[in-house]
Image (cartoon, rainbow, N blue to C red; front, top):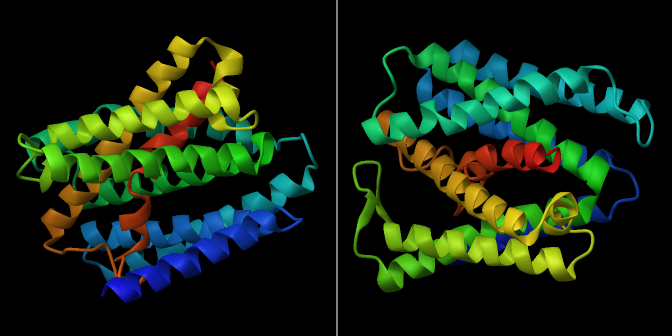
Length: 282
């Protein structure tokens, strides 16, 4: 299992590195659409029993993202099509609102809210995955690959630090009925590591996400942003754990040998990316 996990990770890193190194933005946009489409399929599988929506909705979502990508690139460098204003002012804030209010409430209740039935949860999947695709694509196209990679690295720092801090110091359970392995100590370690990463890169990595944030405010602003984004990465992780517990499964799928599903790998990215994009607009 460990060898399979390592091999899958190496293949994924090579794919991501190849896409980022390509002279055209198309490989990255294709990769983002594919990842969002797979995660959308997995989320819908967790909440809906009907077969046709589980197949049709993700397919339509991927086709929409590819069509919007073509429209974006056709507009030319530094230009944004008219539809991006609707995404920026409507879709992204709605996604941020979902991760700020209903998602944490459902994690605390250990079940969906009364009006969040299977179809509503499937609709939330469409909202969340379109928003994360748009946020990552916009950050990449407007601020560059280094900004995108440094933002994703913040999430990886939070995840890795939370794991090792929890293993070493974890005593108090964070959400025992949703994810028994997570602790408050691990969460604190993850937030601290992610915030330290954001501040450090703001100072020494000119094209990083942290540096972009520092252009809009002070170091205190960067610290506050790091704490917020790291905390939201935990919400994304816990919310997916809730969906899996509700569906009675361990992994969102088996698309990635040794790692589970795509949603398992990007669950923390879903709340972070839209919020990160909005923070750049302040």
